[in-house]
Length: 557
Length: 82
Image 1 (tube, rainbow over the protein chains, first blue to last red):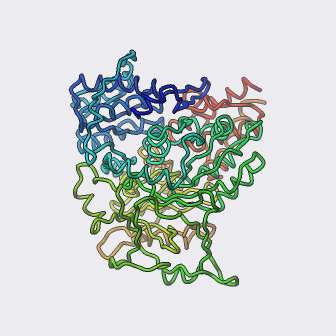
Image 2: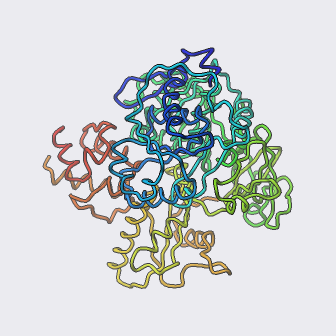
Image 3: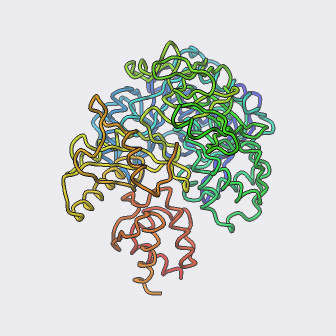
């Protein structure tokens, strides 16, 4: 970044869009100099290389400057999602406390108003040594000294932390080293054939998510490629903005979770697309939740008339623990598809090519391994499987994370002889990786990771629900292109009225205390739910039972 | 169009299209956005439904609990623009 600052200071590397305001181009000069104002504040407050700084800011210029300020200071930035309208402040407080007690930050950066209204009431937050207010940072022109702490960071030291939301997610801060981030990006720019002179990235993704942070923020800034960014909160209310941004800036690359293909296709009016031209787009990359060809089709049906080239559809599979991407496919070539025999897939855990007259499933490849990534598939006893045999995907690379920050217990569980257990099921065929399902109990809603145990704990707090007798899982919904959460709870009441009251109470409790809005609750009698032999709730078995019961469900594989 | 009719029409479409619970009722003063009943993914649906039913535009910047949080408030907003 500092090289670009010296050599290409006037290049507008970020175009920052916000609703109702003119677009703001941010040059390297502005980015480095304003970020340095934050760096200096951190340094003057006694923050030293390696110290963690938690950023609690909305998607804004301050978030960008405070983030790079931390990097220039050699500190470790970590973004915390902002409090949303529907979330109960007490819940946010609890989650935040659990984050703080694990990562022990030296500083929090936030707004004065947020500090007064929220942090001043938090016991743990008020113990953090420095609460830095973005309102107080004065941007003055300064000469950047040649020797700033960020330059001298050891390659192996932690560069940044990434968290997903919720009680469980916040306890697993993915710690990434400088070496891992650069190794990932060096491999990834080759995989997507990034051309900094020609490519323009367009993004609505949140910066606290790996895809938004790595592909649409750090990569463009470090590799001098223009990125047009908008707030996820604004995009979700006005999805047409993504299309007009691509058209206005001749965007070439964009990453989207699967649901966003459906969302863009269905929630934009023709009147909002006047003069929109999408012909510049060369890679529209589907990543971060199970991908469906049907989602690509609804997008294509809507947007080929606006110049969208269907060859631009691409796929990727990644995880924060590998910085971002492990595989990439569909760049300069169509996405590879594999038509497999459905019955053999379901009964023998094998992906055998189907003949024309057999019932089949069409699988989309996530692509080939990126950079140094090696992929292997393990069976239940951790034996390596061959091509087309389905098992747990494990990966090894030069960009794996250092571990979950201050959680060696969690880190140890996810490694096997230096390989990372992804918790996903899949198979390899001709060097292409196909993901077929999930071993870990995780629900992905609109690209966001949701831990079912968090939702179950909330439901069990509702009076009338048997302690320990609630289970949550995700069911793929074709219409929205993402998973819908279903929660089943055992209750001891007979009247429909009482059931309806409990059901509504569960929905409200989960909705106000988590990142999702819960719509599907099923109440059942005692002993309905299936437990494992060790007495734990068997989420997968209960999900299967639910699917069998609900005749009209659209099921995922 | 009187306010009661507007509220009824809105309620019918919201419970069927967004909540997918056609039998449900929504009180005129029930919080929609701050309660999470209408989540962020469904905000844009509100704008689309209002345009469909009443040919009234709601700007995306207005899709927040600060502008309206109940059927009653949303109906007021629509009436002003009819």
